[in-house]
Image (cartoon, rainbow, N blue to C red; front, side, top):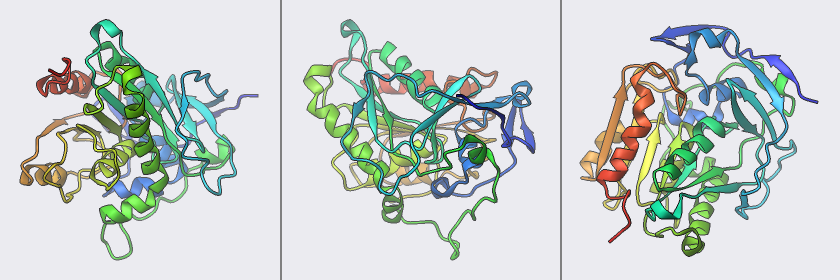
Length: 336
């Protein structure tokens, strides 16, 4: 039996242009790993029309059929007791308590396939996944451009099995550690080790099936949203075998990092009124100091979690800009 509840996460909204956003500012992407259930849910769906916020309904739904989903073989999440569950909100679908990682291919028409592939990592604070707005819809749009897209349903931190318990607001954790410092990339990789393992496995399985899926194994990139952006950055800068050809960080943290000399081209999109991340462009500066290609789209309005939602803000154009960026780098044509 499905359950319908009035979500409690928007009890104190603030206005940002024509969007409703949570009146909370978090100072680092690392906080996403420790988000409370309510705030984690928000991180995937903050940016909605004001008139819709008062009608925000979270409703438990049956797990959608995913006939093309491929088990990545990374095993069940250790010590996980609550089974996977799904709910809808704003007409979009979200997954929780994912314990087994999967990869779902969205392949282009062979007549316009470019050989380029992108792994799509939805966001949700590592406690939920915005599977539709930041997953399937993105993948379908990429496939329409001739790019093979693969939605990564990575394993998540456990949350309450009951949707009512999940929706309850609880005090948020501090934005930084007691010493006021952010975790190092190595520490961050340890904190999200299961998710990084899932991402690396996704790259491996695509390369293993490159011929069947008409993918160039040297032209596989990754795009992530919010927590998925953090996973993308950690995967790209880690010591695993993923080695993405290019990466995209969509409203993820922009803290400075150490950038290797062979770092992939980076595309970034974020809104100035994003309530989860403070203003700062350390990531962009880091890429530039390393003389690596980077493109930033900084939108006046958009909030957090705008994804593929159609809005009256210029942030809605991020996908078209991303496609143009792929074309500029030669990824919309078969490799010579």
